View 1: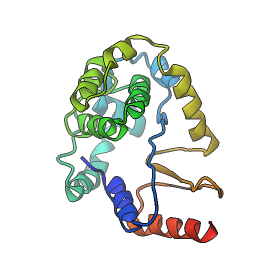
View 2: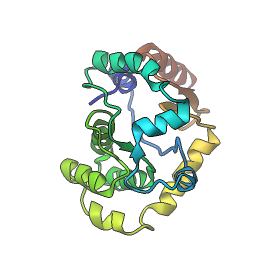
View 3: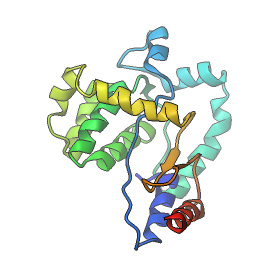
Length: 205
């Protein structure tokens, strides 16, 4: 499952074969752990529909669905589902850090997104998370997840990046050549937006 913004980034990268790229996934909480604790929502989550009604207002989600569903259809992602549960994502982020160290970050993120958006699975549920890790070959996931300290300090450190760049939503892109000031933008971007940034950075190098 490749979302439109991800496909656009890949298109822009493919158009610059002479440049070397490294794509990193960084954590960000749309809703922090404290938010879920106040709502008394645990690792089994809460109904997406119930949550969206509380967040946006009763029935408001139905107004968004045609546009969202069309975006998924156009991208060839499958049928968007709003069934299932949502909840705290701390454990998923911790497992992503493990997957990245094993060179499986892209695969696990793809599986998480498919689980959540297409298959109506709750990616706050430990069983769902471990099953996703096993499917893509992330080793020792269950042992890692059973230790609440594993990856916690690293996650907290990585979350500071989102605070530094004042991230408010996803997707959010930080593009850096390691020398000049990073370029940032939020929201799904066309390939041309990425290409323009790449060209500017090459010109400044």
